[in-house]
Length: 234
Image (cartoon, rainbow, N blue to C red; front, side, top):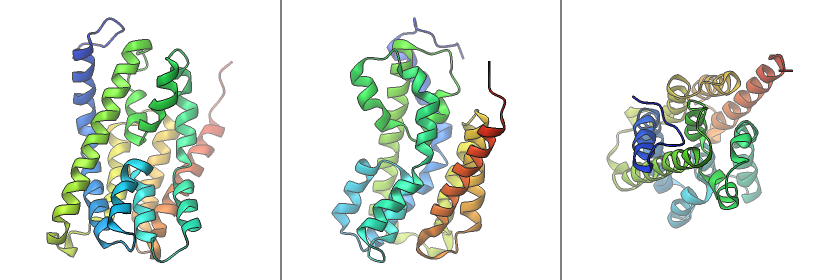
């Protein structure tokens, strides 16, 4: 496959972005499906659960708030979602230099699309900048946004027919593990998702979906330790 550059056409960049995104999206499919099921089973009003997807736009935080609804206060719901998403501070800091030469509208609105998989893909093509980076980023973000909501809708509609023996509760750990294998190349980020996946899988039995919170904390802390241990460039 040819390398992308600033001279690549819009169609070439979009096609390459979608081809790159497809294998990384696969581990997220069961997670999107189970979030759709969780919306149906949540104490949260169904319409609020549906709206939470584009509003929160972060699967693990959305899953935690949906499943915790009715058992904790609204303050605790918001705090839990915020804590789970602390890893996005690391993502933002790492990718911010590539936003410096972008138009103001892009710098304001594009961070909305910066989920785990999009961050992972941006690290695979460091040569992209300017318009080519912008097109690749937006095409990638649109792929994950549309794909996530497609399979979440399938979970909403068909979730009642899924047997409990499928153990879809392991879907968050599967997504993080697949992300680590397929997409993350920067060492602290890779450590973060691996640790998060292992911790999440090991703590699935905790009440109130606390395994997601524990996994997020463990991943962020592990990434911080790795970041501190790496020598700084001079």
